[in-house]
Length: 137
Image 1 (spheres, helix red, strand yellow):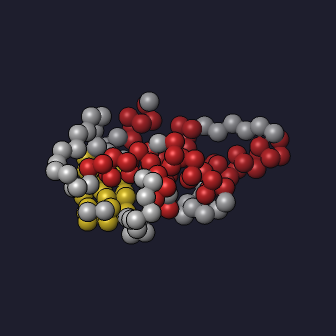
Image 2: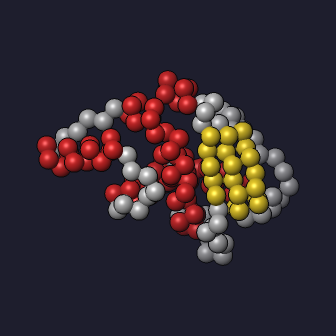
């Protein structure tokens, strides 16, 4: 999976080829920890919870018909069944990149700092080489 990061602290632009084991090596103050924390916030529970709250509040760039229809079905019938494989096949890269577009809004809280401006931070995922593996898992 390739990740492009821009405007994150001292990192103006970086491209990372993330593998099952990726080690960040470098001197102090070069952005290793910020990259790791940024990825953890986007790919982990923290970002997921904030993203779906924003989605329900209609504050995301993307809408997913399978989710919107599922919400309507749940509200009308009290239950819903959503095939996550179908969702992932169609939307996994769109979804993860939509989550990443909101990351700047929570990075101050996630990193417990008010001294840094994350407004220009950009994170972009390219899942082309790993999508099949994600679906198989």
